[in-house]
Image 1 (cartoon, rainbow, N blue to C red):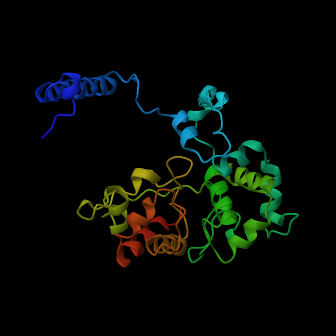
Image 2: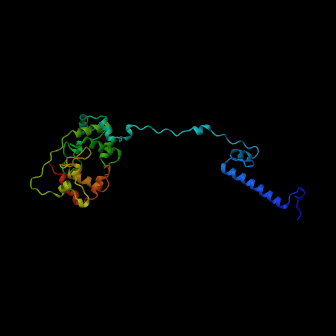
Image 3: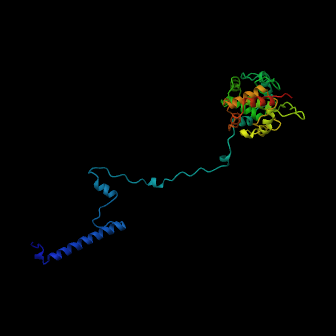
Length: 287
């Protein structure tokens, strides 16, 4: 085979060597460009210039970067205040705080309200209802408890075929007045058991509960004398037996569900019919 480089005085071996040197130099230059990221002569351009170079003729230029976007910052967090850690008041609490007068409550209790609510004494009596009544005694219950029940009737948290309608006719001032009136009344005196009397089944549940069924003593929340313990833990003694039984059955069957944490529904679900009858008889004792 003839050597085309022979006229230049380069033999075949020299041509091969020269070609190898050239390829090595180009490979070294390309590798260096990849390592340090700096383009070298002959490197393909990148970024916007590439886009512009490859865009079809007549295409609009790419949009310029928006300098305001780089300056945009996340909104500063809202400053904390002391009220962030205060539990909001229930509506009945706000109603009691805003007003109401016991003398106005007495008028509503005895003669009804100007908005058409019936007089409270029509069903509840002046002091204590009869043992067969299904309406509770209100005198001596706390103003907080009565206000909560009336607002629960208004809001639908507690339902009753008569009381739900009556409560909806009361203004907030009426609720506060009625609650403060009955809350200021004395509860009936409690008759102590005679010495040596054997505690009834209801008395045992009240004072000791039943640990085998995880039933705490009713006295834990309603007081050892069953006159109430705290503004929302009502007194049970001297309430009509029929009312006590009706409420325990309502809690047990989830017809009444305005115990905020579900405690009464949980406890009542473990009561037998006999338990409910015993408790109703115990609390329904007359002074």
